[in-house]
Image (cartoon, rainbow, N blue to C red; front, side, top):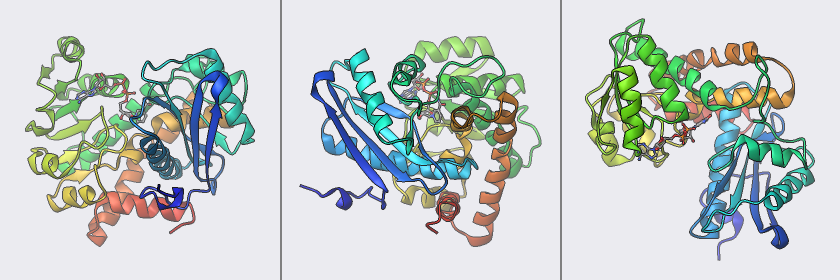
Length: 349
Ligand code: NAD
């Protein structure tokens, strides 16, 4: 049996809390990585794990990622993550959500939740019945908050444009060929913006009809999901799964830029160095995909409106440039530079 602090992903987390409520069918973990900058914010994942170790590992890894993402987004928030262990049938009841809301409440505001994989805005409304430490609730027009996907897509679009300026020395994405892996909330929003600016698109999705429908609308090309990372494009934009950039995938990349919205794109820390060694310009995922957390973060903090959310998202390209400048100056990979800046910001540098 492994002690919690001996898990490879344990990184001096401030707290890792386990909640059980058998009557409500709840087993959940809330990992608080850092509250140095403010309450630990990060969505809750509702997922059926093969075993408890995987759930703990996910909570440890994702909460640390949120510390970095929130710090780099300039939010006065720390990093945390909720993981609710779903049964095989993924049964989600009002009792389970209420029990999870009480678990969050018991932490007294040290952890703030929002949607992640398997959780909807309706679930956030249910959790809100037990605690106010929740964001991602439906909001009125012009207000900060609500569905983070479209805001994430805006930030990713701006980041792709910044990478094109940097890597291709082109001021516009018009005529630039972008291959997008996954055309859901983030990838689909990105595709629409790029198409509106005259980019040439190749799309792939595990749900092929979804990619085909969007391609028909935007005049794009569709390839099989197993081919998208190897397309000879100017930019490859991962907007589906994590851990897709491993040694083999990086060796097969045919694009000079990787810039997309998926979380945890690098399979291992060594893969950031692999991209760098191949001369591929990489936009660190938690920097480019921060639009959604900026949106729900300001919603929770109760200051700012949609205009401020957009203003803060507009700072993503500048942060990427700072990282790429330091990478060029030091010879370190963009991924390593981003981690180093984030660690400094949370007082662990
Ligand atoms: P989504 O579920 O709306 O879309 C994901 C799409 O990827 C789906 O269409 C799915 O069919 C497709 N897909 C799954 N596996 C695939 C594969 N192997 N190849 C090609 N396509 C595949 O999810 P989303 O909200 O768009 O999130 C996409 C990614 O962005 C995730 O990694 C998520 O963690 C990350 N992200 C999302 C947000 C947000 O605000 N929604 C914020 C930050 C990061």
